[in-house]
Length: 120
Image (cartoon, rainbow, N blue to C red; front, side):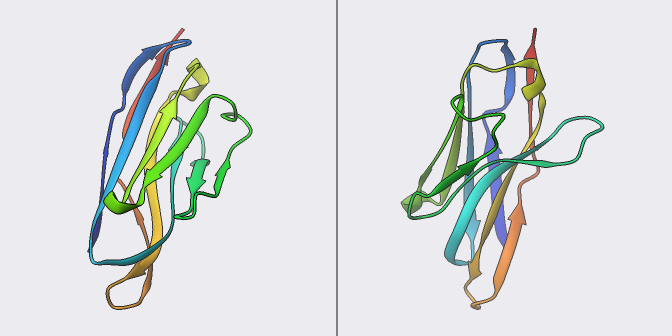
């Protein structure tokens, strides 16, 4: 009932930049947080960054100073600006949303993922 559509993945060279977007739609009453996770081959999914509607952010130490998460609350959209990319940033990036739906039930949704590949 809640859909997340990601865009913006692709290829970049070391030191390059990419910007991910994730738009949420559906029967959303309120959003508690939106964020990004990533999963590299052979590794567990890990937190990249999250943001609340009030603008409070949290990010992994490995991306601090390089990645910036932001959101447009009116559009239910979250962005991830990735700068100074490294080969170890290569992964599938997943959008995540936690909130309350129109039936006042808490939910958590995941996007399908978008591939980010950083070449050395």
